[in-house]
Structure formats: C-alpha cells, structure tokens
Length: 290
Ligand code: R1P
Ligand code: URA
Image 1 (cartoon, helix red, strand yellow):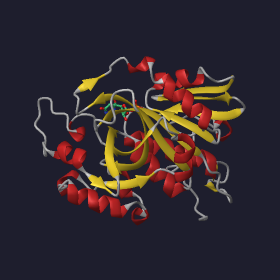
Image 2 (tube, rainbow, N blue to C red):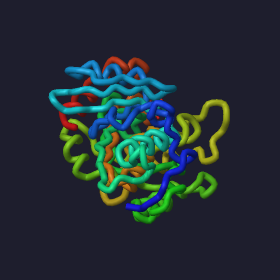
Image 3 (tube, rainbow, N blue to C red):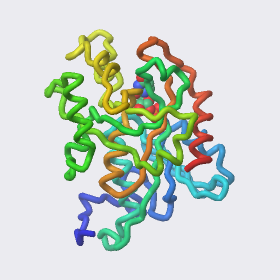
Image 4 (cartoon, rainbow, N blue to C red):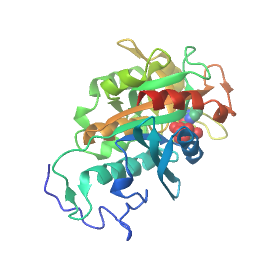
C-alpha cells in the first residue's frame, strides 16, 4: 500500500460524494460486479434479481445493485470500447479501495469479482452464431495497458509468438496479452462455454478487418489471426473490452473474466442482428455461477 494523497483533479468526487462518471457512492457497490456494454442489457440482468437496492444513471453508465438468490450483485453498463473500461474499472477500484474522506488508499485490499457479459464476432468454424466464449486470454489491440507500469507481468511470451505468426506491423501499436483469473474461469466457464483467445480491438470496422469503403492497412491480418496457433490456443473471437478489463483487474488485484455470445461469424459471413432476445441464456448462467 502506498501513502499517496489522490488530489481532487486525479480522483474526481462529485458534490454528493459519488464518483465522477459512474455517479456511484462507495456503499452502492457490491463485491460481485457484472459489466455489460449495452445500457439496455442492465435491466435485462436486473430482471432476474429478487430485489433492487439502488439504481443510478449517468451518460452510458447505468447501474443497478440488487440481490440474486442472496448474492449481492452490481450490474453496470460500460458502453462501447476500452476507453470506457479504463474509466469504469478505475472508478470501481477507487470506490472499493480508496477512502473518499482521506483520499488515500485503504489499508486492506477489497477484491472485486468482475464478469463482463458481451457480444462478439466468431473467428473459427467451431464458434458459430450463438456460441458462448469465455476469454481465457485476451489480446489487446487497443493499447490501453501500454500506458500502465508492470506490462512485463502480462503474458509477454504469448504476445511475442502472436506478433511473429501474424507478421505484426509496428504501425498498428503494440498488442498486449492479459489472462483471465484462472479460478473465476473454472467457476464460470463450464462445458457449455468455449474457452478461447479473444482479440479486443480499438474499433468495430478496420481494427476487426471489416472493410467498407476505406481499404485496410493489412488486408490479410484476419486470415493470419484465424490460422494462429500456439500451445493448443487459437484465436476464437473479436470484441472490444476484454483485454482492458483483464489487464487492469490483474494489476489492481481483482478477479476478472469476459464471456461473450457470438452474434456474427466472420468465416461464415453471417450475423444475427436480433441477438437481444437470446443473450438471456448467457446472463442466467453467469448469475448462477458468479
Ligand atoms: C460492438 O457492437 C460492441 O459489442 C460488443 C463489443 O465488445 C462492443 O462493445 O460488446 P457489447 O455487446 O457488450 O457492447
Ligand atoms: N462485437 C464486436 O466487437 N464484433 C463483432 O463482430 C460482433 C460484436
């Protein structure tokens, strides 16, 4: 624990005592947290709760804390992208581990369990639309963890092998690899989920190899990603938040995992735009197992 005073410009607290973006107060946060991208998915998760304790909304961050079968759970939306994960995970950690009166770190770590329930694009024939994928490893194309210390504690061996096999172009920035918490992975990813390597991208189109009107810097990157194989691991899916979540949680001492439902398969060139009706199956599994 470091004895640092977090100045008002570094840790912004609103006049009502809530944290800047999430508008949550420390007492609003449960130890078990479900993160979803879509603010509309928060009500879907909370529809399974036996009771609701508080509901807070600001920008794309919608939060409900309640009870599911005697487990106190907070569900909150992050919106799209790793930039929002930086905000959400730092603010959740501050709510748990910084004393808002003294603006100093608390003496003992309060460990959070963070499970993201999202949607993704499948990359293999074994990941058709409807598959649930738990991200055992996440490769971050988003650059976020390059700004934090302790990068060497991430999975640099896997990173080097990935860059070699896909002939990574340095102009794309340095990808990093973050692993899910092993215990949480075993708890949540049972036989009905594929354990995979997820690529978290800084965009939905170009960064995921979707070419509409503007040509891509490396039009063959996705073919190389699909072929990549290392120690039995293959890249299974694309989404936009898992690496930032896994990496930040590891640095902060929290447990984190991302589970996504495939809504588009890039090999089969198919998509299910009506997925909102079917993601409830994944939500129920996570609520039971968290
Ligand atoms: C893109 O459509 C969004 O969907 C996926 C991506 O990660 C990105 O946030 O996740 P969510 O469905 O959780 O938003
Ligand atoms: N989310 C993504 O980021 N990519 C997809 O292809 C589908 C959902």
